[in-house]
Length: 171
Image (cartoon, rainbow, N blue to C red; front, side, top):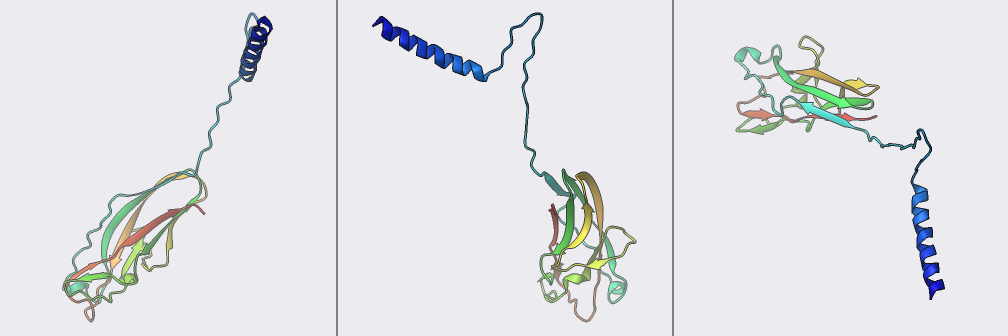
């Protein structure tokens, strides 16, 4: 029975020794060091924030029909990312949503966008257009400007709305 106890005790000590071997210890004088490696896997992190989820467009006056487009400030897009990215803009449909007698065939391209108030404007379509791009991670903000074209031959009274889709992606 003593031999059996001795074998059990030896086995338990062996198990304890195995556990201690995986940890680092030191006991030399006057000093000693042990290493600890800290590590983390960082994923792609991207954030897109719009200053507003709605933009109230200016109500057109008679002078705005068939003439210069009506200018409005759109939202400010803020991007934060830890790798290269592209920000695009598109309309969700080829035509505006119409209510209350509005022309259901008003083209999405009648709402144009630019990154400068006096810049070159491009009509919105369902094909995404590049607003901004960055080859590396960055944090930036960009104001967007809208211009709406109105046509006396087709833009009947009513409520018009168009969903503008901003998309942030990593190429």
